[in-house]
Image (cartoon, rainbow, N blue to C red):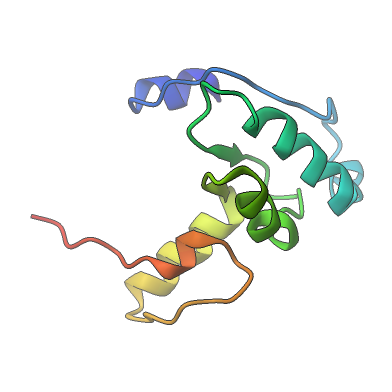
Length: 110
């Protein structure tokens, strides 16, 4: 994942993990644990935002709270996918509690 993000032009300064490869276990990780991990990584001075990668990790319920605590964007793979699909479908609504991403619009391509 780090190599893919670096190839796309993102600098990755820190990585956190729950060290779980079983999706059934990942899906059972509590919101409190996810929030604590996001805050731990996001508190770093060299961190501009946090990306939570795993479609089985239920991160959406903690995104807005994490962003408020950190003052930085927090994105998850499922959240970004849902936002992008909604914007491509022409939906421009803001979604309360879904993070600052859902208060932005898709930028038109040149």
